Image (cartoon, rainbow, N blue to C red; front, side):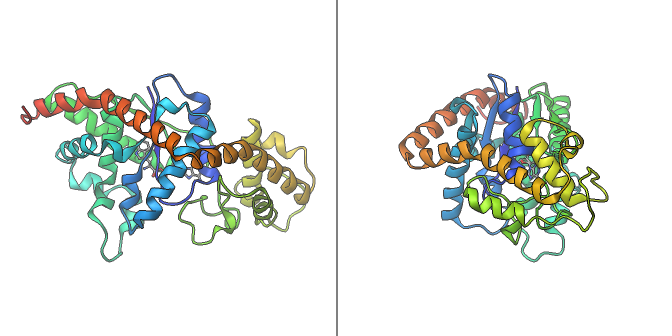
Length: 321
Ligand code: TYM
């Protein structure tokens, strides 16, 4: 089975959709689990009210995008199980291994008051994966190193104490599935971007999406060609359009001769891809009782699924009754 998560540290954007959520919908099997990793959104300063709101929003988006309601849950609803397993895995992980994580080095180095959780969060992520016995973890490239850590910890625990955990492997998207910021194609599209002008959010209104795409940075060259190194802005637009259509960027490029027409096509493709998701999410958010029911059922199913691995791991380390 597969598991993957998304962190409500900001609003869900089109990169999350194309690089993750869309694949979770199309490649999903009957046992897969997808969750909102709300506890991961606390490794830097956070606002409790906003966190709660974004968690509901993301849960709604996952269901609205087409993941069956019985396969989604919220991470903090399993906080007891995950907290216990995280501790066991912290006792399986070396400090050096955690400190080597690229995201820790990028976000943590030189910052005052870095939270300890910024260092240990990949261990919580390993607990998310190992508790459920997932064999495959569909993530973007930026999460690959964390899944490799989960893999190393599963192997080490099994080798030291006894076989409990399935050794997971990352499943990466095909090349080009990294959506870039429309205003700054050198950066990936990100929830925490300082300026939202280059970030298309899943719940943006159609006209706002059109404006953001029209203002996307391109270059002063003429003709339309797929050349990611030399023409990153145009390549990003072609990758977005190709991703919406399930085609290849180079094939899509051949249809266009001007940036203006390309941008119109990209804008319409993104608007139409997101329209049903946006509408269904807004319906769900207007029905908190339905969202609460989905959340509750998901939590009990996921907790039940993982419980025996935690009990076995506890017993093997010489703890618990
Ligand atoms: P997060 O919330 O940063 O990202 C969720 C998923 O979206 C992918 N992604 C992108 N793909 C393409 N283009 C982009 N611009 C882009 N930005 C993000 C990410 O690679 C990811 O797959 N720590 C994780 C969540 C997590 C998790 C887990 C994942 C928690 N526990 C266990 C797998 C298994 C995170 O913060 O993802």
